[in-house]
Amino acid sequence: MSKLDDSMDNSETGKETYSIGELAEEFAITSRALRLYEEEGLLDPQRAGTRRIYNERNRVRLRLILRGKRLGWSLSEIRESFQLYDSSLGEEAQLEWMVGKLENRRETLIAQREDIDSALQDLEQVEANARQALLDIRAGQGRQRRA
Image (cartoon, rainbow, N blue to C red; front, side, top):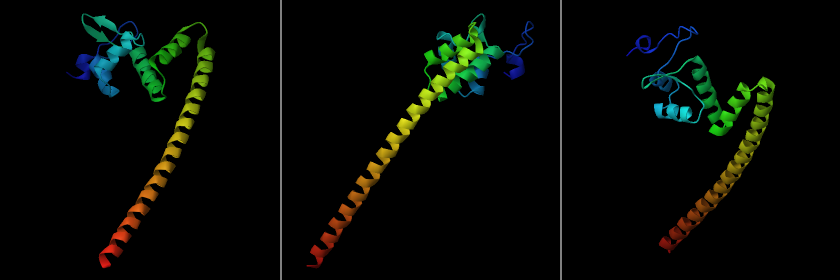
């Protein structure tokens, strides 16, 4: 089925709508993930029988969900961000919340990077020691064969 066949025009808003398959394909996720986001209250598609019909607002929210996940946020943190945005507290509260979350995430990633760098240094030292021990063993075996 083509996008033209499967999409519908929402006459109230004039915005294009999307099927679950179209959004799943566009964002390279599964339809199961979309249903999970709906169950978690992050998306709210309209229904036509058993069909889910996503509007542009859902599409934008999906993009934000996936961005939040890339940043390492939980679904509950993403939901909290949406709730702040939808509340009367508005954009300032949402941005303050986001800045705090970003600072925390940056600190976590820096600590993880330091742990990884330390682990790599340890690995390189152990590898160098093992290679040297192997060379020493092989050199000793060569002397034993000649004797």
